Length: 189
Ligand SMILES: [Zn+2]
Image (cartoon, rainbow, N blue to C red; front, side, top):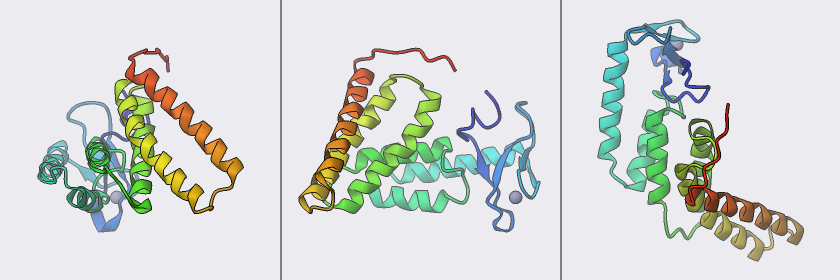
């Protein structure tokens, strides 16, 4: 494991000095290494980073499964943690599960985007047909289908594009089935 967690930034903080907001990472993989900002080079102690993370984790726990609170948590935290940080991903996964029985396009779109965002991280951390990918695809596919159906009924999508999107959706569902059946495929990176 490297300091960027194979480029996913699963532990990357953001620099809060003078609205810098650049990535802050440990200087080395040693557990007591100092953390340093990529841009302004400000250094942070590991204790400081652990305390910051604990506070953010407690903040997330208060959000329960409320869509409003989770969205507010993501907004509040977007200048503190990298968007792929494990706590941001955790908040997004809870949010994905909280967005259900959706009726409007904005929410359907939001759910789909959240799924895309966490799938990118899971593709690296859990390559192949992992159960967690299956669960996200399972959440994403129905909302994408409803959205597609709405667009088609409103005649904003030409028939040919509609067909292509349906085929794409079918392959996502096949992917989802493979994941849920636990037919693991080992991918060596
Ligand atoms: Zn900085």
